[in-house]
View (cartoon, rainbow, N blue to C red):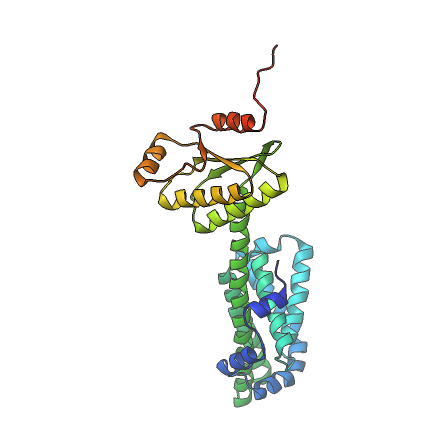
Length: 308
């Protein structure tokens, strides 16, 4: 899985992006200095704000309790949140700060926290901070400026975390899709120098390329002489699919192996004839059993029945 530095590069989180994002959120040096001056306030109220934050989440929202069924996990979350809270008042907003906020997004995505809970939690967070701030300092121009600076840094953090959250989610989907494609393209060695590839599902351009690459790698690895392509599980065989099969067959032939196409239904055969697809470069069989018998025959073997 990508680490935080990978995501920093992938999302373009560099010095220029940092400057641009700070400008967009109007997070100025004055705001950072104001936040640094509020550090004593943060240290005084850290425990009260974070404890109230988790108390609201756990008591008022049963769904959020599901993330903290383990007490050890809960304690670690509280400790991490208190550390995060104090970092808001560090007065620093550099690339290291961005990378730390990036980790927040990937962590929440990895443990399955939905964005609605993530954003809702920040709303609770801001309300608690503002409540303690105005209770201690009263309503004044200075406390209003302080509250505004807190809102700026929090929304700055949210933008980074959510963007990373989405990127991590896309990465997870791509990994799952890759795993599914891998499972749906198994190359099975059924005998010495004989491979079987049962194709199931739709064959698009991306999958066809994967089929060819995996097939060629296995041909070389197993020094195969015969490849059986079974298309009984392919719902639609049109010109595009036929072309993919022909390209795979030609690539296999260049490596010195022969292709046997099996699982050809009557409807598929009729379609291929109507499309004028030339299958002369490969052997064809209506059933996988026939294809297995042909493949074994080509390699000097045969299926025999053992006597009782």
